[in-house]
Image (tube, rainbow, N blue to C red; front, side, top):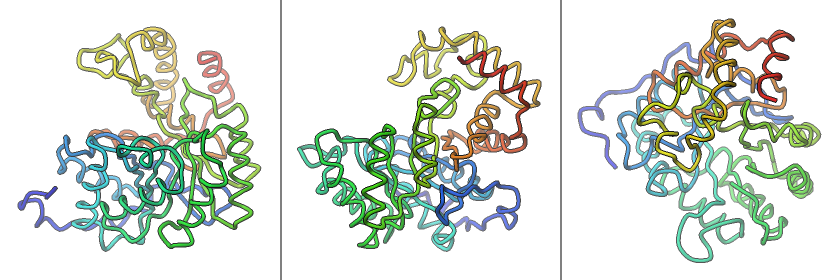
Length: 337
């Protein structure tokens, strides 16, 4: 997809002060520092979306010191279109900044028809990354993830494919996503044995979804692996959107896969109480929710989506107040437990 001619001639020059305000955290025991907030291209970057809006979001992100752009093979819709649009924007705006970016992609979910376009086989992972690199116009990604566990493929095969991808120069580091603590431990041992740089586990984490606290964070700590948290706002519940009910046109009103009216209704009282604490802290609920995740030492970065540059700027303001008093933490725990 082409960016229109008028916008094409607008040369992008990054903000000279972009690294002065962003907080950077080490990913596990690796040499990699990640911005405390990273940008995810799961939504709003497909062919159904306005590419100029996506371009504005990515420019804003980099100007704010966000160096980590997170994609996957099937982001869109349609599948592959987020990577293709990103490749277009990379070429027009970020080509000269490539070495300042930390670009991720993944494979593990349904991508193409037939037995080789899903899950965790060597065949699928290597073919998928080759396609991703072509769509983005890259020689390599900074990190490549296996997107979800495959119970029917030996872990040795999946991790072996990740190892060979690094050795082939197609990725600098590898990661996994959505793995439970036990499988994460096994994967870490396999990758350590082959000296493969395993530095990140991408996991769903929010005040309303704390499964990673039951063993996974400890497993990551013990193996020197960082965590990057996605869905930090619980699909929008941890924002001011649902404080007074379910507005028309919202994600919950549409009863989409990831959020329905019943879930919001069950949590509205908690949302309102959490919002009161956020206001006392001088933050929006969304900003406090992000800050609450970043209090975990294993969390290197929080992955946020954005539908506009304004929304992204608002989320980044979470970094203005990352400290919690013991009383605040206890009050939050009482509400969400």
